[in-house]
Length: 540
Image 1: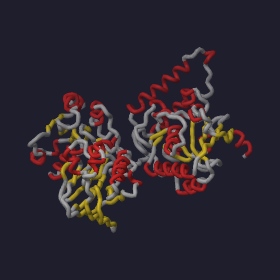
Image 2: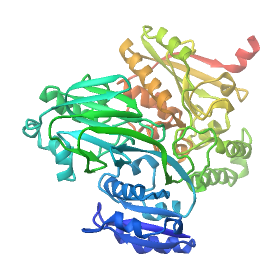
Image 3: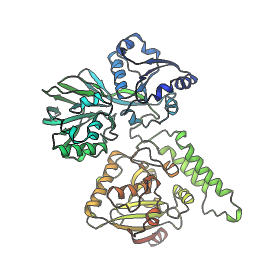
Image 4: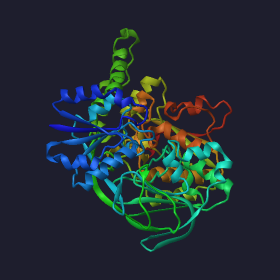
């Protein structure tokens, strides 16, 4: 089995070049014959691909940034070659590689490329050129091609640089939509990240058959500076100066001499005929179908090894206590077996739950916007995960939820979905709360304006739309690989913080359910009631 390894020795911080021998050693040990090809001044990739036989290679590994990937992609497709690729993110920003949750170490990335897991991705095409991550045009393009800082150089140098920027008139047409006006710049995104902007296109999915288009319209100078600042944080989509839409094809016309850019490389001239080529390329990834909302997932042993060891060591710690000190109130081993049996439903790195909250839920939540409170619910449920958390934290209440109404018709949290929904953001179900004799919940409320509740609801709606997954590893590792991968108390704290109602400062992934009570020094929470489920079932 042969692997073609194409690398840019001048990309990024040269870490890849320093590890080249290690990479070849690891791949050879797995039975691959590695053929390195060094990019450099005067190298013609088209000529190179014309000389090789694609049937001799299993895959192509590319080390560099988006620009290097773009060069290889265009040379491959221009020569009728469609081999899968793997990416060593060795560039400055590595926008496209950012989509695939790649490890940070060269050794771990190489381990992925010894396995045969693949994800199909779309690519974009403008006239006769291809792009994989982003195409752009406008006043920021030329500076981005002159400096590795791109748009950052304007933002950091301040208002005197922004004064030099001039909007240009463009005409954009797509499926009946027409924009014919002045704009500062335009982005056509296939990925989520570009040029150091980690969340410039938060709704973009690289295998949905659509491109995400952002038009940054002409606006006052100070608003432009603010807009760029918002884009740095991924908060630009709500600006009145930004037009956003998705499309599989569009045309762009401009009479002025402005630059275009494809993945950081100089682009083509106007007019631009843009279209998406669905699932055109296969990427070697850690899992199959790396970012699709699939109900069945592979779960890497490496991802759970450490967490499993921590749980195992915790159980042994309990069992090695002197017998007189050993108090067991349930079968710990049975809890572990329940969690292990449920692992195939979880994914530690990707969103697998999407749209679990329906329109009726949001309608009921909207009816409660004027009652003046959000409700924080702590529970001692008796679930397998809850009881193990209780043993680790030594706290009775091991689950946290959020509700928009006191009757708990809108109670939600991150949970396992009770084998009905995928693990992630779900409504809470009665069966989850009543799994031991003394199962109970305590309901608290915190003052919230209508605007704060509406903002909280919009945050929930956003998670529901983008997708989520339960942060099972975060219970042990205090780490979240992606924004919407959370556990229960992490979710509740995140929502409270988003609307300015958090009353203690902690990393969200470090928040425990009982922190909402124990760190409430100024008594922001008001006690409402406590419910023991055995009493409920007796009455019913």
